Amino acid sequence: MAYDDLRSFLDALDKEGQLLRITEQVMPEPDIAAAANAAPRLGEAAPALLFDNITGFTDAKIAMNVHGSWANHALALGLPKETGTREQIEEFTRRWADFPVEPEWRENPPWAENTMEGDDVDIFAVLPLVRLNDGDGGFYIDKAAIVSKDPDDPDDSARQNVGIYRVQVMGKARLSLQPVPMHDIAQHLRKAEERGEDLPVAITIGNDPVISIVASTPLRYDENEYGLAGALRGAPAPVTAAPLTGLPVPWGSEVVIEGVIEGRKREIEGPFGEFTGHYSGGRRMPVIRIDKISYRTHPVFEHLYLGMPWTEIDYLMAANTCVPLYEQLKADFPEVQAVNAMYTHGLVVIVSTKKRYGGFAKAVGMRVLTTPHGLGYAATVIVVDEDVNPFDLPQVMWALSVRMNPADDLIRIPNLSVVALDPAARTPGVIDKLIIDATAPIAPDVRGHYSAQVSDLPEMGTWVTKLQQLAARH
Image (cartoon, rainbow, N blue to C red):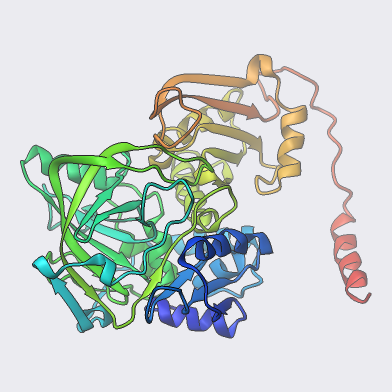
């Protein structure tokens, strides 16, 4: 089923027992963030949370942990909530084959009910803002889909971008944005500043669940996120034109904020508790001037807690990090079988592959580092054979234990780019990267003694089924 807005998805979660409505009065801080921090601890079927009785606010609604479990992620894709992790990634891969599906343009978006413009803009009057972690430098908007276009070619829909970036509230009509250099919006901003221009942006909050998934997917520069949304939904994604900037924005958003990133202006932003489980510190970041806010009556503010994994973002950026990497690798190396890039935004990537000849696995590892995702995130790549399931960590550890010789199978590549938020980098944004070849050598590489591997017994599969059936009767 395709959901056109956040509210219809929350209703679906409710019907499936995947939404907890917190009706008791809670404090904005620390209760909301603490509850969202706690929710993923409930396991892979953890619910979303909806707060509507918040001290100090009138008619405020805050949704947390909407994508924060494999059950919720499955429902976002229209799958049964019991669908397993690898099955969801495989289904994501199947739907990728339909990409792109062009969006459907609609009129009369629900977020056009109310507007603020010019001197009347006051983000504090629209959003019930709360801090997420004690050390955060202020209020953040961290689950918005931000729309921008390539200023050199604004009519090319392939070069538009829909991305999720952290946004700090700096005033009632002023925000700051962190554009990681390897992300598309950073390229848009660079081009605008080279032209001596501001960059128009639309910040959309409270989107349908697939928009959040595609906005956090590492696509190539010329791939359109709305086209991927249509493929994942099985129906065209509904979009409409933002009234001030004309940018294509999700039809079903709760709030649409329009303005510009002011060229060549920077302000100190941060610190912020990030997906790495560490605070990022303060840095000079671009500034957004808000010119117009459009919003539904009593909008639902969808927020995202980040901190020590696993949190919601680790579910949100799991399948959609694995699959683009798989597709990009598979195009160059058909031998690649599966990619697991679920851990901490894919700072560690595990690839299983067949091999053509000796040294092949190392070449696959190097290719990972040159993908759009690998350029900024992949810091360690583990390559395993096709008989190892990269989603089964005991199998991966077995391969590391018996198929990796540190003398020959550790390839360290110095001074490569990495997201500046990586706390391991001595210089923010630059790090040495590591490829670990945990595959058995093949000719002409004749190291080791791998000719007599124990295999599963032929009858094992039958007995797995039989034992499962017996266990279900008890």
